[in-house]
Length: 501
Image (cartoon, rainbow, N blue to C red):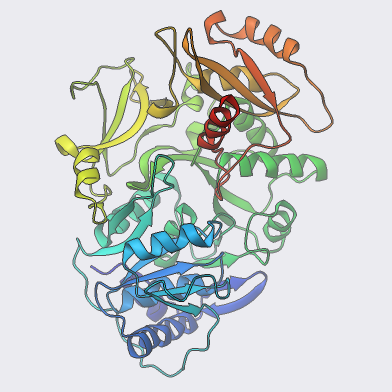
């Protein structure tokens, strides 16, 4: 089944429901969105010769046209390649070329060289009106719908092939585990639509609910507060660092979260102090998910009642987990020999289920490595407790081995974040001749506060074992992040290597 059928059905059933807001302005109701999609679909086919299986790249910040383009591609059986708009054009050009896209739609002007092998068109280019309103072209469950390129922290990005079936099951998991979409909701796109925020649109379309693209085209705390108060029933995805900023802005203005119905968070670690403060300020509006592009948004979930719960004897530990398996997948912790490990034992988190990707685009070696044994091997380390709650230890590449002992950065980061003068922290391992690696903490102090290395070292002595203490502290005004707000530890490691040469 073509995932675009949901838009067709919603528009026929609820033509007058608001569909897309550009800031506070209504850009389309569902009847208008359906017509715009059919017009774009004919434009793609007639002007550019796009047909079934062809790739169309989208290199743009969030925009009302984003949803039009995605569905127009699926309408004619094409594959979308959403590209992180914060990438350098040279990085984006590599992705577009690797995907074999014939066309890239962009809001960045003439972003690419004229020798790229693909056609570049402005997202705002006029499209002829009056195409007949038709149903989408039929698609098979295993047909590729979305080609998602990973962040490429260990080399060139890999294209994750997500099928119509993958996207459909991901959306069913959202409705079952995360939130119940409703026509009166406003799904806010404050995080990039090329990633998880955009993947969540399908549930809202199925419910004939509204999609809200902020005028800023991104994450602006004051704008989100204003939209929550004027529109109401906001639902959106946010990285933990975004929530931290929003809560700080709310505290500064006295805002209590009114008008926000659900914030789904993921994409990086949510530290205990941060979710505690968020609940204190906003109340039970938060749902945690853990996923990755290879099983989009659907590895595990901690529903809002469990995020907010304090009645269970182990509520604190559960809040610090990433929840239980999503409703459409099976999870296991596998050891180096591929055997399943019992509760309490740390190993690699592995996934089976209908949300797991088809494989990597034109990369059979990487596909075989990641999908061997019938499991998606996430590269993340974790363990289950006796109740089936999953605890992330770290990415396997982030593990620090010092003197033959494993040190998990998140444990050290949690300890440092409990210090009142620490705003953000990233702990990495750096090469050290005697011990192999040493623990280094990159610290961003709270605004207007100072903290010394001696103070933090004394603090850590009271919090964690001596061998886990950072051997060096680096103070900064900010930490490098990707467009999703996730701290880029790879950049910190590369900077450390350059400084030692």
